[in-house]
Image 1 (cartoon, rainbow, N blue to C red):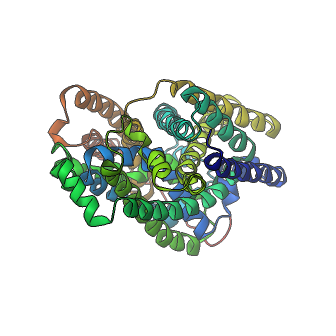
Image 2 (cartoon, helix red, strand yellow):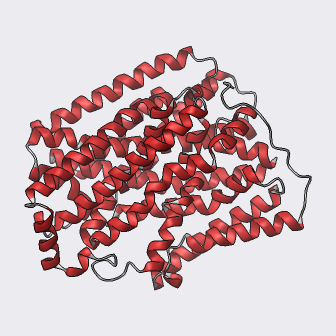
Image 3 (spheres, rainbow, N blue to C red):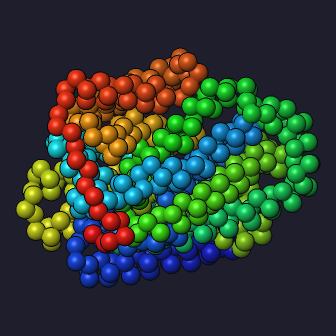
Length: 489
């Protein structure tokens, strides 16, 4: 075991644990357990909001899977990945004040709380909870695989051993600390990711003899690696454009991101988060995918592209510095895992157990069930990750597409269209989920239908069905609540 690499990572994990236990103390002092455990009592400012969104969205796909795809396909994948720059901007611009006002008015702790109050339908809530649990397990499995790959690369232990260490580390501090632990560690992790990306990119460029040499080497390996179309020409204009939905504007429909728009302190914090988040996401996405693409001439013939980032760091940096910088992808993975864990846990506890099984459950029982469900979900994700896929980015993107197909229009139209009703929401979710699963299977077997990602057609179909059913089966127009976002709930 290379202790010069491992020790900085152990120090990083120790800091994370300390934050989790500190958060546990704050949690015991909070007035409302659910609000603090799942939303941190809505106390977070601009920097914290920006970094928790960046850290939640920046995952194993961003730091391992995405660069691995760029290693294989070249700069075309880096261009595709840049559609993610607008993520935080779109989420806070579209949801922003409106979502936070409505959430506070209804004292909503989860996205499903909002859907329940907005549509007054148990069917909508149960469909939402089902979608969250099913698709987020895929996303969590991808993060577990990424974390295990990283620890395996750094320590040399077996994949299963690395997977166990990663699972145990995440479960301890998330189960104990809740959302407050998540967002505070996300802030630290976001800063580490930003600095680590810049330093590793600089080291890779130096190791490759400068940008001109790296591009010349890529041209010699395969000229297509420096074109927008990928190593084999498969990245068509229509396919890349469809990613504007999947990892661009469609991110509004991801529950783990949308819930962040419920947790900030005031409108000033939101505006600051938009600026900080856009800059940080741009630097991280461009930098990490450039590193992956430049990996071809420096480390040719890597059998598992998902490991290109840790292997490059160990190749171009002194061991102690590699250990520090590799805290960045570990930070990204852990921050996404903790958010997904809490989201699935909240779907089970708040949206099913409390709403429909035991509405009068005492707070002591709610605490026990919340922490127990969080632990069980983590164990299930561990079991799903035992047999990893070839490229984990596609497992993560599958989850993205499913969640967006289910949630984007019930969220957006529910906020901005008074004529949106439960019939439209139910139709939209059923059509979106079913058409996405069918389209994804078709693309897997026969190639991309119409040359676009599987999420594209379901998103448009779910919109059409939402509007048609809401207009045909009209209900009394919804009256949106009014409240000053600068006042605490």
